[in-house]
Length: 388
Image (cartoon, rainbow, N blue to C red):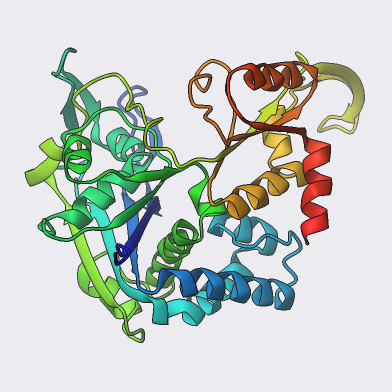
């Protein structure tokens, strides 16, 4: 039986801020800064051909470019955010651009989605109504929330009239309340959701790079987010470019109608590499230091240092990247484990990586329920180092 074509989706913010001074209605006689720029979620889908050779080439070219750009993490694939954080924006753009050029022969089409809901004309969006009250959400806020939903909204947009075509549909993980678009999507196809997909799945990673580059190319050419302009910035490539925007006419499809969130556990791709981390934050550390005032007089002041969440610290440490590598090798997903919302997501074949005594205890409890692999972050680090 012939394999289905693979199509993968990711999303990002498309933001063109423009600040003006306007009268402040809350403070008569005073002015305030108001953002009058353009914002939309930007969804990017990539339709692949010869998916097996794509993965091999994508990983090989990533390694080669990582060496030439001195990208130090040694990951098999990257998301654009990590590349920007490691190289800076000036080097991240050519890195991603050169990588994409190496794999365009494996791409049939890119599908670009965005939203046109001018806040000046449409001040708010009515949401809810299904088993909950209707409420008004300011349009600018609605659009920002929509970005977290937009990987599957873009997939729904892509499927459109493709009623007779079958796809292996991959989505980067999302957070969303129930929408008619979601009901339409799962009525048509069962998507595969990858937690941290842009970091551990090559197809979604590539879609992420295309989204990043579409934004960057439009910006550098001083072009607006419009269908003809999207085609213009990708005109030198052989793949087809398809651009569709969502506006007020179909708003009823992509606004949420319920207040509860979509339960994605039945769509998550396993195995999942769960990273369990103890909460080791303290309330804060106060200390006195001596500082000069405007007159040069030194006085003692108290500083309260608010520590970062340990999860945020871990994201920049080797155990996190080891978990990403392992998820890639297993062909699965990776996510931080939250004991309050993830307890029913663990399945046979999953991997639980623990950091701290409490996390070790929770992880080992699952051995009485499922056939899972459990190890400390240190053990995972050593395991992945041997595979390099």
